[in-house]
Length: 127
Image 1: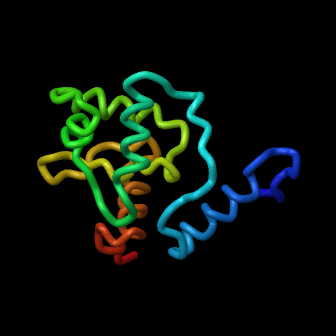
Image 2: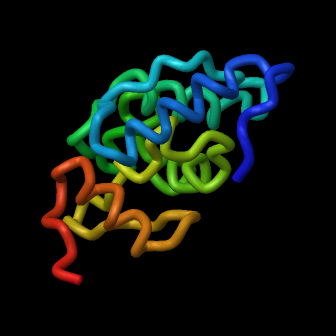
């Protein structure tokens, strides 16, 4: 809740970008990401998500598995989403089930619905 600490690089930029995103004014994050908390398959999936699924769009778990050259790894993509150390900035809320369902989300399904509504993918909640 306090102001960003000046000795932490990029924190002020990340704070400003997140505030702009939640205000509906930012569609693409530019803050540099530290990918050191992920590796291997999870890293490939999360980077493909960050680079290839823009604001206002969604991708299926299987489609994302195909994009990283691992057909049949849809469940592993779900696990990668659950391990995402940078949610919202690396938009795991944009990954949905191929049957038209919303899928899962570590922040809760209501949060996922709100993020998708913010991006215009779902209608805004009535109340």
